[in-house]
Length: 100
Image (cartoon, rainbow, N blue to C red; front, side):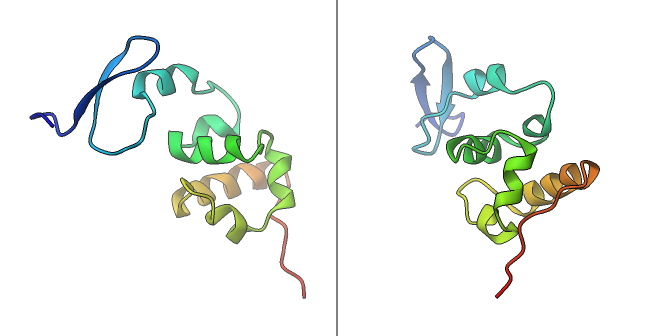
């Protein structure tokens, strides 16, 4: 650890960064790959990765999931769900509902 609050790490592209957690994600690499447009561009990196890791790449893909199912994904929080709901509403889409 150092005074920057983490351990010095170097990613495979040679970026140097400090991390205090076990997360291996390089902040600079993550910033470089952030989409400039689309609903994924609205989200934080952890939320974006959570959706990408679950092959949710289009707004319409979210219609196959309930809001609670999306909230259960590691990296997705209430703020991300609010952003997703707003983007979905603009396209007249909504999360799947639990009907019993």
